[in-house]
Image 1 (cartoon, rainbow, N blue to C red):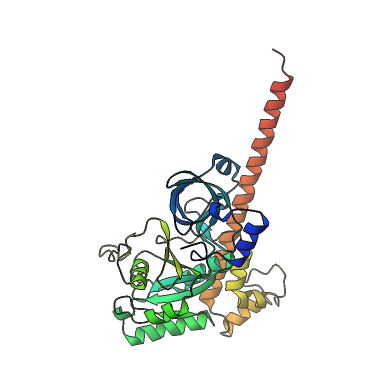
Image 2 (cartoon, rainbow, N blue to C red):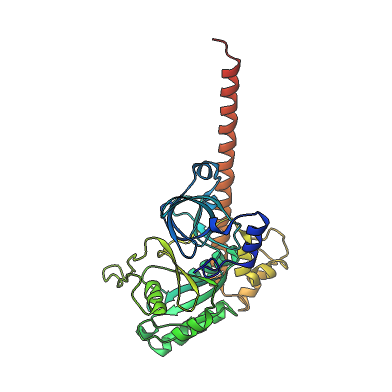
Length: 355
């Protein structure tokens, strides 16, 4: 294998050539766990960590590598390397860090398509799908929904779910899948292309690891059943990892995510709720909150059935969440500025003090 087999793009090659970077010093992050990395040049894998300069110069989590990133590295021992740079990303999947308002958690980088998995038996939730869509649209990634475990429900239930999804998310690409029977697997493999990178996202227990095992036709990932006591999935994958299929497609597995906090990118919400945002331009007031004002074009669309009220509720919830995220960032930056000013004053005082 070489860099091409790992999915390097023409744009990234151009960057390497323009900056006179030797290809022997380029690798892709294929596994990440607690800031410990496995990187690959195609023919050699290395255990790696970032330089101290990268760590101390980082202004946010986005300055750290993620699975799927292309990095520059220096080999210092057989099988060991230091990451000293990250190539410009063409896409990035990120969510609000759990329990850390105003901070991002990186999911994967340089992804072409995200497979959003939801099981049709007890996990199906269109509001949650819209959150995944927002994260994908924020990162410039094509979303494709996989409705899994179709063998567990009858055709009537499946048709009802399909109808609801198509009504809320017009034009959304989705596939029906049973990893147990293999139904729909051929549609997914037919959709995947050599050299393109795919990411599998979803809650624990929806069948992500089972799907990847079916794609490879062997057990490369552990799988667990749904917990009978909580009716929720058990975490099988605890880190992010990249694999290459026999057909040359690249796929990234991610841990199950129960929380999907929205970050600061407004384009994600705009793209996901484009119909609502377009209608909002016709509201009587430019600062309309779409919660009951007279002359609100969005509320009018809800009343005449053009917009689903549940979609509007979800849109407003995510907008509020995004505003809170942005205010948290602004507050943290203000504190950083105040701290920096205090440090300068202390240093200035020390410099002028005579002993």
